[in-house]
Length: 478
Image (cartoon, rainbow, N blue to C red; front, top):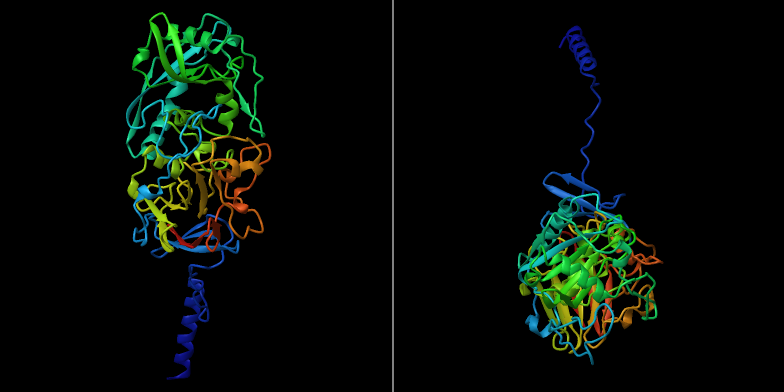
């Protein structure tokens, strides 16, 4: 080729390069690649790469790394060495079911006892709004209650798989009480750390007097005999009624006769102080679960991992007692006859298929329950990226006592959380749902939540979390 012609070609090439903003020697930047196990910096960060999805999570070494996800939390049900679920339904062998206090005679194990309202079908629940001459309501009942009841209905559908439904009975008219507001304040008992009870709120009338006045007025508008449960609602700003009248159950006399009613009150405390930590509908659910027959407040009284301890998700064991989860969603491992198994668990926080909990039978009165936990529609306080399992003991020989804020006595409860064998060196903030709601909050993730590689040991049984992605895989061995 002639040198002048070659020079012309090179000149055109350089000019073209200048026009396009590229030089002949510049090479394209490499496309970033992502693989499972790569380091990452922020818990819960999600990355889409090709047809793969990744999430930033903690490993057992408390290092953040990418986990590959398919996006379906459903888990296979191919575990071996399992037993029929009836083997794991330990029977109530307490010396007495009558304890005294808020959870008198309520169930901790099988059979479900002393449930005061049905656990399936349509359940008629009434809202009876009361106000006072010195504290009138400034909003309609519908305006006040409709959003809370809508969320309650959605929670019930999720939690009971449609087996139970609340049929709400409500009028938009406030019922004016014959006496000032302060006469309808209930002196709510509080549990001390030593298990004794304390009182302190002024109560100017007896429980029976308040009940007679409230329901004598209410029966003019409602058929009391047709109701399963009642909420007596005072206006949220009425601080004279810290706790509205309650009785679950109580014999109530009115002009039309005497009947047993189950009711609880929404007063200033629940509208304001408690609602700052937990939604009103969840407060209502907790109280009604007592009437459904559950003792609650364990495992971990004050830990908000379950609605029994001021969270918003129903624990697996309680859902089994009520029959609100299908028996096919529980894996039963009889440690008295079998040595080892591997079980895949789908999170109880999400709508998915597979085993929702593993129940390990240790004796005629002790089981261990293992649950997989994730952020879900009713565990929104759990931080994105949270992935692990919790384990708790249920002992049907122990009473349903409480020692509020005394966590050193949690093993005296009928149920309590197990700690992992090697506590994490540093607390991990997985969100408010893992913080004890007490005067001295405890970060649950320090030793209660197992990450991949962590283990629990109790009663001659070892439980290890061996895999964790869309679902969790645990190995149980003796």
